[in-house]
Image 1: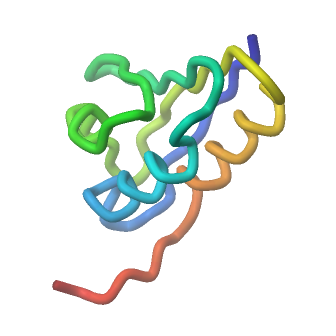
Image 2: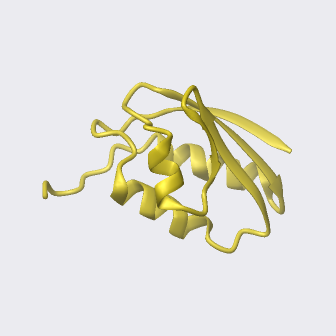
Length: 90
């Protein structure tokens, strides 16, 4: 198992669009990927579960990965969570 910590960098936090990117990125991963913070824990298979964590800019989250290519998978998730997304306003 690989464990990482990440600080949410996006100014709008992890809202619907970044959550959808995360779910798509790890869809079909042959193992377990979990994100947790003070609001709970969830895997990365559901946008709604990710939204339930209320990950705002500056929040720290813990990542746990079990399965194939654990280190690379954990590092990729850290990269996504620490990305400054440039989505146009709705």
